[in-house]
Amino acid sequence: MNHLFCFGLGYSSGVTAERLAKQGWRITGTSTSPAGGARIAAQGHTGLVFDGKSASADVANGLQKATHVLLSIPPGADGDPAFLWHGRDIAESKSIVWIGYFSTVGVYGDAQGGWVDEESDARPSSKRGERRLAAEQHWLKLARDSGKNAAVFRLPGIYGPGRSALDDVLNGTARAIMKPRQVFNRIHVDDIASAVIASLERPHAGRVYNVTDDEPGPPQDVVNFAAEILGRPPPPALDFATAELSPMARSFYSESKRVSNARMKAELGIRLKYPNYRDGLKAILIVGEPKIPR
Image 1 (spheres, rainbow, N blue to C red):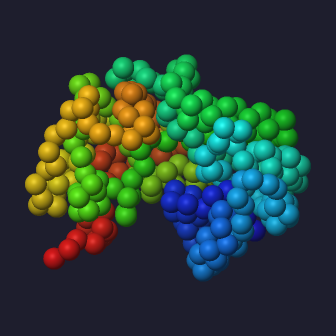
Image 2: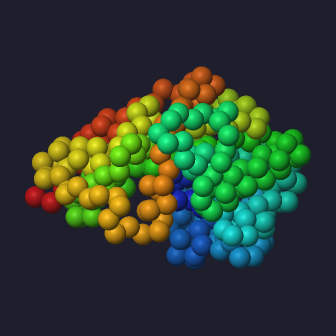
């Protein structure tokens, strides 16, 4: 039986895991707390605790039974916790044939609104991007050295049911930050799952994929469209130069680029379910998430 082991069974990995579980896969996932492990178990999976600060005997044992590993824990200053504490277990596992890593398009740095693809130089302009790039390289090398397939999925802003501009508009936290020539890509969580599953089914050893939508655009356009389809007034426009933003948010706006997904489509045969944010947000609204107060 195919057995997916997820380091950090969160939003994106959780959607992927649920789709695979419906296909008969066994799922094991980690959380940083016993409560999180219990939540995973309540979903019908095996839930383990891994806090990233030390090795876990339960995790090491689980990796000897897994066939595929999906990594979604962000690296810290010391590196990727899963690699640091359990990289050797993954490399030495006789059952694991595939390793997938969730990274970020932030590894490209700022392209001043220009296009980038997987052949573009990775020049991260933030510590977060530098750590992700280093983690990518560590996992790809481990896979090569241990004879396993590996895929890196570089993700932009992720949205989906319960986590979208619709929720921001409804809870009053939406802001239309205006910065000239600022563009981002996005990706619906269901399309992330499709890319991962396609890689599992048609692995290309050591490949990096940009898993993004087809339509990079200004962030305020997304917020304004969400308000429009909800029948709410758009949030006031705020100038980036004077807006009060967290250091993380400000660093996010320090990079502008358009990210090509051509390799993903060509090699994995992906046809995006939500090629742009309009399709994705309308679909979320149709299925009733978020819950709209009456």
